[in-house]
Length: 355
Image (cartoon, rainbow, N blue to C red; front, top):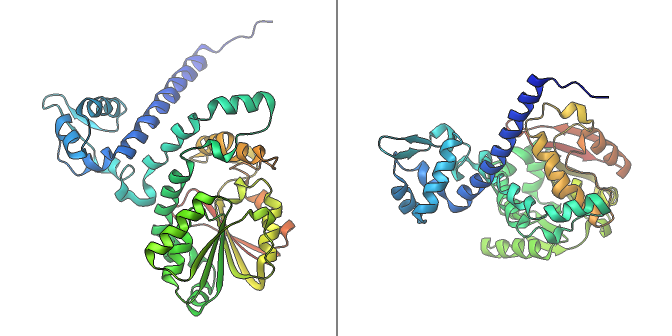
């Protein structure tokens, strides 16, 4: 039986596919602009020629000219055909430069090229099961560290920590704190600098991440920040900390239930656990209007879910959602969980949990 095709709908979808393909290439070129510093260079210039922009950025003019052409037809950069000069509107720079801080969306574009590196392995996993291990993502750690640092620098001390009632005063007085899955350890070091009377321990299974955290702590002259290489699923620390944090790391875990249980065990009786994780609903249909849903589900397929499955894990995925998160927190032994949000942060929910 031949199915009738709605030609108008078919043409509209074809146009959408063209937009998707164009967007994919624009994302790659945006990543190049971020990594080469082109956005920051052009944002500081008056309308300029490709030669002037290349000189300001210290880059090859021919490559810069072709990059500018891509950005121009992509309606990112403005071009005056008479003067042959280019301009980055300040309204666009607000989402593309280092000055934008956590609002710098150009840094997120780097994930497109990063995920492309493992496409062959992902296709193989679709056919044969299993997953792609963390080690396959050669640039993941520095990209994630850069993105996290922008957020931590802007919000950790003044916005995130005050969400927990009374926490700042306790940190000033002196308590024991751990960040589980600390990555490069920047959050630990920021807190250790701000609250010298408290003691901070970063825990991560990555030798590279722990080494980066230690190096930064040494550079900052911190004596109250330590870092340890440890698998959170195997962590045995009974009643060791007054405050524990995780930042966008639980959904990546191979054994998230064990990790959450170990975190609960590591808390002292009056301790608090702050789990910052992706804001989403556990039901697919309720994420249709999420502004970054395709990106986050895509990252889940190409990284978060598959990394977990590579280690015979649960494969929660990036968009595990609030309902699933509350279920796992309750299962781990947390009797009270409050879910908070921060204005302007479309990525995360903030789970404040106590036993």
